[in-house]
Length: 131
Image 1 (cartoon, rainbow, N blue to C red):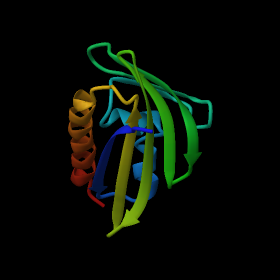
Image 2 (tube, rainbow, N blue to C red; image 1 turned 30 degrees about the vertical axis):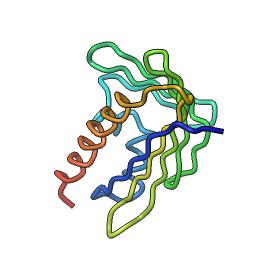
Image 3 (spheres, rainbow, N blue to C red; image 1 turned 180 degrees about the horizontal axis):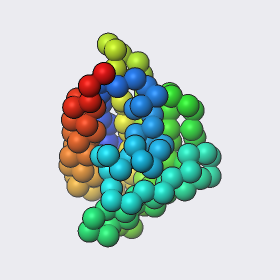
Image 4 (cartoon, rainbow, N blue to C red; image 1 turned 90 degrees about the horizontal axis):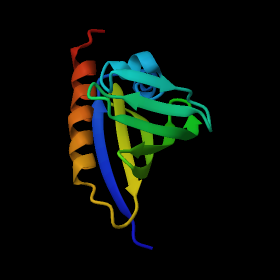
């Protein structure tokens, strides 16, 4: 079966607890992703991010393993995908590995660019924090 996915890895200057909260806690998410956030990080719980232009990502948490992995579905502009994020303690911070899976025929270039943009904001956010 053909797969169509995006893979990203970034290191952030934060412990896994804070990195994990960046994908499961509304207040932490607002620091880097969206204008409004509603999340309930339990299997079957809502994942909703609304951007300043009104664009909405709506999905559902599929797996939540505290401080190690989050999997959620996402519908963005009519495109369905499944996002898996792994959190690995590395070098005093956290290595975040992200994979987003799409239908085989989906053009992923805008999603790829979007992740580059938002993951840079996330990385910068933690780079600016002082211990």
